[in-house]
Image 1 (cartoon, rainbow, N blue to C red):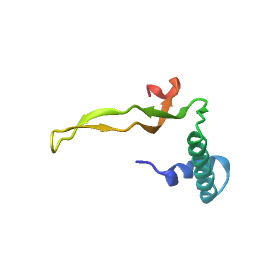
Image 2 (image 1 turned 90 degrees about the vertical axis):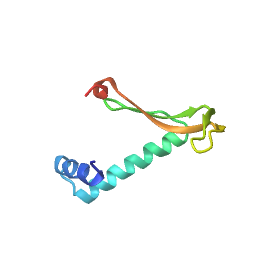
Image 3 (image 1 turned 135 degrees about the vertical axis):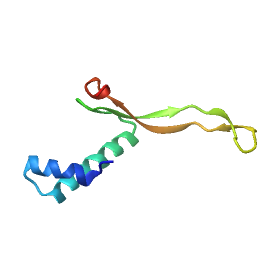
Image 4 (image 1 turned 120 degrees about the horizontal axis):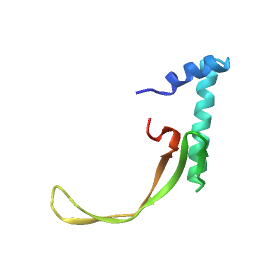
Length: 89
């Protein structure tokens, strides 16, 4: 798995900034994407995809321990839809 530190290294090299500054920029970018999505906005990044909130409807499920049917409440989920450019890489 690749983390922010690994991504920051080539970004720092390409942009001529320090790795620390690159990490700060990446973290600020991600925080802003999450903030905008939490406010109900769709965030579209050309060539990457769309970040948005989706509502997962309430549904009936079976408890595997007891076998009883129960209802799971509706909830909001953070979703990402990749662009056509990266969808089939």
